[in-house]
Each structure stands twice: as structure tokens, then as C-alpha cells.
Length: 276
Length: 276
Image 1 (cartoon, rainbow over the protein chains, first blue to last red):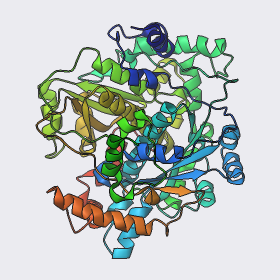
Image 2: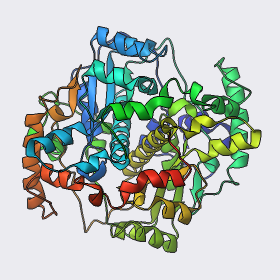
Image 3: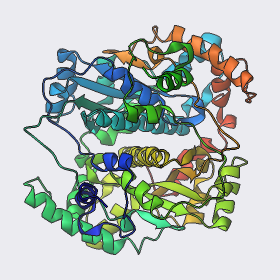
Image 4: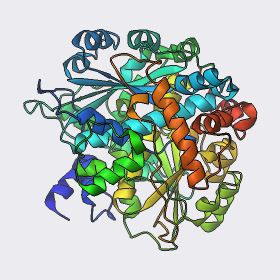
């Protein structure tokens, strides 16, 4: 294995590189090197960049070819500023990136064509269709992320766009049955503020063979929790508690930790997803 | 633009290739050429393939580094057969593929470590955390799909694994708070049964600038609906109705069209996702 590939695996798995991983396909090496980018230069994107990203997104699999997602591309500084304000303090990169993509779980397109033709569509009211559209939005967005990174750009997902879904919908003029699932900042990474790939759980904690084995993941999960405690401290990153477990559980300790997203269900109902 | 790239764009967009798309990055060309593969040879996968796919999956972005997903790799013929039976008739490729990946929205790992340490975790009971884990599962799975295709393999997502989520959970021994979101067949495409990339909506029906414009997407959506009617008939594919709109709306006409997934909400409650 080449040294750069070995370095990528070490960055991703620390001491826990799977022993069977002794060769890596070049396309996978590129994915392995993903890191979220939250600082961008002021350089504009090359013409056609957005269209290429969207073409990649549309090439992802989707359920029954319903294509139940959309994307709103935001470049206007005022609108980025207002969207940034809706994240509750995480908005610096929303403001600074040259291109902000809002990924929309979209049953409105199908609803509209059904209305024009007066066709039944009660299936749209079920949780399954919300699930379908959220999944398809995510598959599309991840293709977009891989495409952007392949072009040398950096991205970061912005889940905080779910803090106030109704206000996001209002800002973007979303029709009923459309829901902003997450945002994505796209731009040229600021070379003066490099980021690194974040270590992940050992494969032994994530990959099961034939059946899920809850007992087998205990040791590798605990090992990772401890290693990540060291990682967060070594990199002067904020950590709530002593290790990854305490930090992560702090994040889900109760409704008060969810940055208003404890009311996501009500927000979705208001946006036209009864989700029976 | 090279002829192969032009062909890829024509396969994806038909007459509606965006005029600004006059160059395509090679990595994006590879994504553009995605097509679902439902017929596989009996060739086994090269050693290390699964580990590379999982490494790509783990390199995708995820929310707050909670890593709230898992994957169960199924190769046992008996188990694949039983899982195939749970899809209700779509299972031939589940049976035939050498590797079946079941992608799991997994809050169980975090729940278990919280239980061991006696830490609060009521946030797990909210729809937001189900949403987080489903999104992160999808991002991971799409990286896996791109990785598998980069290695020359073929994949197809199997959403029909949501038809009977409790029985899938039982077959795979899933703990509470773990939910099989979708399956994925992986294998060497059968060269005697080639498939082609499916045309998608024009970008004008999917990509909005600054604000969502429901009126602007009417014409390109109608145009696509008609073109896809011809496409389905030309390729002798089953179509319910005259065009893509009628076909798609038939798929969501009511609870009876959802292949039992109208009860997804109850199934999720039974699996330990109260999703308040």
C-alpha cells in the first residue's frame, strides 16, 4: 500500500485500521480523505460547477424514480446572512461560502402535478413518503458532496437548518410538502485554515456479519470513545465530558439539547407532512 | 466535451442537457454513468472489497460525529433467501447477489453505551434523532454505492426491505432502536443483461435559484413526464398510466399502494423509535 493511502487509513481509523484493508482503490482514497470544510476563500466557483454538482446529485439512486427532492442554490449575500441567522450561532460558514445549497425533501412537485391532473395521492400523507424523500435527498446530496470534493472544493453539511424549518421554508418560498432537510456550504477551502479527517469508529463497531451483535461492538466502541477523548483534547476541540461517549450522550441528553429540534414533528406537520 | 461524456449526459437528460454543462470532471462522469444493477454473475467479490466499501461509507459526513448507523453484511444463502421473501416478490436480486448489505439506522449503539454508564439520553426518543440516523445511514450508503461502482461492481438499493421492518429486524437480530432503512445488493454485473442509466428530470425542474419557484418547474416536469412515457414504452418497461406523472402518482395513490409501508410509523414504534 502506498504511504499516502496508509496515512489516510490511519487518519480515519487510528490504531484500528482493519488488517484486511491492504489495498485501496484510488476513487475510494479520495472519499477517505473527506474532511468538513468550514472556512472558505472568497474565490468564486468556476462556471458550470453548480450544474455538474446537480448532475452528480441527480445520478444517485432514488426510490421508484419519484425523484422526490429539490435543491435551492443560494448565492445572494443577504439571503445567506438571513439563513445563517436561523442556525443559532453556527452560521459563519453559511455566510462566508460562495454557494449555499439547501437540500429539500420535496413531495410538492408530485403533489402539484397530481393536482393539475386531478389524480389521487393520499400516499403522500404517510411517514413512508417523508422517509422516501428524506432518504433520496440524502443520497443526492452525498453524490453532490463527492462531486464537489472531486473538483477540489470543500463542503460542510449544515444540520442546524432543521432548528427552525418553518422560517427556512418561508425564506426560500417553499410550497407545502417541501422541507429543508439540511444545508451544504460549498467553496474553495481556505488554505490558511486546514482541517483534518476525523477518526471514525473501528469497523468492528459498525460492520456486522450475518446478524447484529450488540455484545461484539462494546469493546471497540469503548476503545474509540477513549481514543476520541484524547483526539478532542489534543486538537483543542470542545468536549462535553471525558470521552466520545459522554460527549455524544450529552448531545442527546434530552429535549433541551436538541436546539429546538424536539419540535421537528410539529414543524413537519405545519409544512404539510402529516406523516401518518 | 468528449463523446463518451456527451453520451452520458444525453442518457441522463435526453433532450434537456443543461447548456452550461460543457465540461465534466472525470469523477463526475463516473457518477453520471450510474445505473441500478439487478442481475449479477456468480463471481465472488475480491478479498477486502467489503472493508473498502465500509471505509468509504464511514468517510461520509455525519451529524455531530454520533455515527448513528451500522451495516449488516449478509452472504449466507439461507438468510438472503429469507430476506428476499420479505420483500414481497422483488427479491430475485437479493437472492442472487454475492453480498447483501442491510443499512441500519442505529441509535442502539449510543443507547447501550449510555446504559452502561447510566447517562441520560431522552433525546433519542425524538423524531429528530430518527431523522439524523436515517440521513446519516443514507449518506454512508451512498458513499458505499459510489465506492462499489468505482471498483467496477454494480449495486441496487432495496427499499422493499421496509415492507416488513419488524421481521427484517428479527432475521438480523437487531436490538431495540435499530431499524433497517434499506438493503443494497452488491456484485459483478451480469454482462449478458446490461442496464442503462435512467433519464432524470431536467435540471430546471430540480434546481432553484435563491427561492423555490413552483410555477417555473411546471413546464420542464410536464416535458419530462411525456418523454419518460415514451422511454418506458420503448424499453418495454411496465408503466401504470400514460406517462411518468401518472405512473408516479399511481405509486402514491393511497395507503393500498404502499406495500404495507402505510404502517411504517407503528413498525418504528415497535422497534423502539417513539419519534415524538
